[in-house]
Image 1 (cartoon, rainbow, N blue to C red):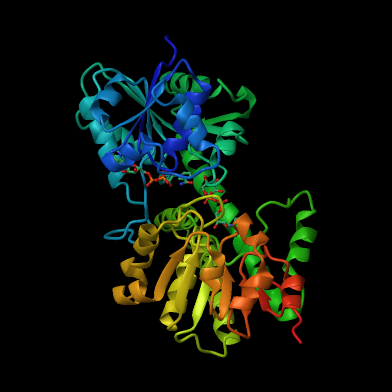
Image 2: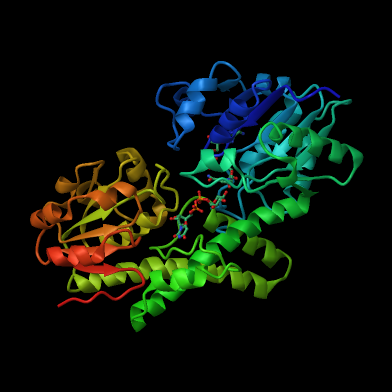
Length: 469
Ligand code: NAD
Ligand code: UDX
């Protein structure tokens, strides 16, 4: 059969955009069309100012755009031309109905599948890239039947994405593995080989893992749950450190030196954020509940409970140090993105820290190099936070780089995101412009605490007790 010549990706988001940019970059013989319902997002992809910040992404897009990488809203046309169709639409946690707060909302996946079945006049390989519940491939096959033409066949593959934001391009260029799940039939195996050949333009066959669709779908949920579990585990130990005098950085190092455990993903923090971990663990919990595996569901629920506890614990520490009152005190918040090197704020721990401090009556100066004002307002006005709109408008200001102005007259500065440039600020100068006593709360363990204390700061950090005289 002929080689894959044309790929269509439905959904031009954090996954669809970078993934397709790298495919286009590595497969000059393949035309890649990324389509989306949002004209605004597509316009941004076609502009000088692409809608997602990822180190290295802009360069690749500029190199391939207009050659074999195209962004458009011509969804039907691009589906029709494609040999392979990636579904990379969002699958947020349901905010209504059955499975509320747990199950992923498959509305967007279903609408993509229905569009494919309505439009496709030739057979297609459909790839679920979005993170979906186990057995979603089966549902997608049924959705595809809605308008399926005679002689048109669909093969549905599961090909979860493991990229992390902030390192998406290097993760895509050098993946640990590629996972492809398909049907255990000749046609299923053929489809797996077709997709595999696309990746083999730059990835060695030996790291392409093929399984049945269910194993592939479950592996994605389990991988994210286990990564998040490591963070909650180390964060739970950080609470012990603060009460006992042990130092979490020393403990992490000692634990991680065991090659069976490994050193990555053991950084204590103010709590994990991002659009994936909490959503995917909830997805797993919902699956367990449906399978009547209550003990298993409870086990994974605890990962989220510890994460919530960590955020709350950190804020309580701040309030206590500020003599139990934040009312009308100015607090500088360093970082609003959920991690460094991204402008993404979804489920960022910083949002919750800000929410609790606003509840206490604080005024916030938020400093983040990549988050814009509208995005910040969008997050803080989320109805679930229950913050009055006038409070947000009057009590919150955003700064992108003027750290001195962000800190002027503030009582405390709170590190929520581990941006590298936060490390190199002139903290002696910052100390001068702050109210005294000047407090620093390091929720990311990125600052030089001894040095800060020598300037006169009162310093508190996750997972350690610092000496104050
Ligand atoms: P996103 O919200 O950034 O992008 C999704 C895009 O799909 C949006 O632009 C939306 O307009 C578009 N869309 C929705 N329905 C559509 C339709 N019917 N037709 C055309 N376009 C449509 O989401 P994301 O962060 O890219 O995540 C996508 C999926 O990938 C999710 O299932 C997520 O769990 C998974 N995932 C995300 C990451 C990550 O780091 N963000 C990593 C791995 C997996
Ligand atoms: C995650 C997975 O890593 C990725 O494989 C999957 O495809 C999508 O979900 P992402 O959420 O983009 O990626 O970033 P990640 O690096 O995993 O960080 C998630 C959160 O955990 C961030 O808030 C980060 O700051 C926090 N974190 C990470 C810690 O608090 N400590 C750590 O040691 C590592």
